[in-house]
Image 1 (cartoon, helix red, strand yellow):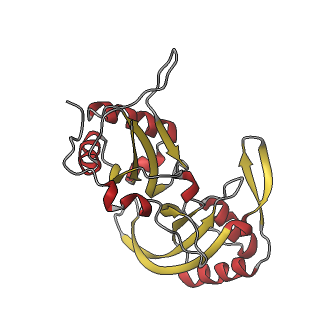
Image 2: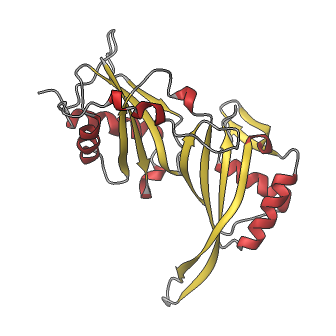
Image 3: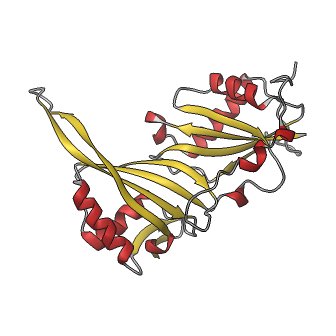
Length: 256
């Protein structure tokens, strides 16, 4: 049996797709691509697919991870092409590697989020971020499976900065007139905690410390996942799997 690790993106309108629907879509795509999946035992065998920290519904991502087990050896590069062709646009396979030793989940304890805030002046956003980082604690309400509870969102925020601004073109319905508005963009590294602190919790924290109220919903994109190093940066969870000794080039993509 061989285990492969896949990085994929969730883009565009598919950011509103639930994780359950994404999982079903992936299973169908694996069958269409002819991947020789390994199955669990018992009365209801299921393909051996393991998901790592799926992004919440409504957020896009450039760094989603899944592991699959197969019964015949598969070329990782060919798997990328075959599986990507079988998936709908917006679920895009970026990379696949043969799994090395250790657990992929143990290599991920933080993520980098890009949060776009149309209509929020970057200077105003910068002042709010300064207040957030200076605060020793920022308590927000979070809805969990056990109901609403107070959490300290500040404890999970490793870093936050306003990276740049863009001009967003808007069209008024009716007269077709166009206008522009500034868009503040926040880049933040968040440590995995329990419960998980997500982009909406970061925005709630900005509202608590600075009364920051975006006029339209924010757009959040997960840019990376990995293990935090001593500087607060994220390491690549596939780095140790890319060793030359793990290459599988020349092997068939799928079982004949």
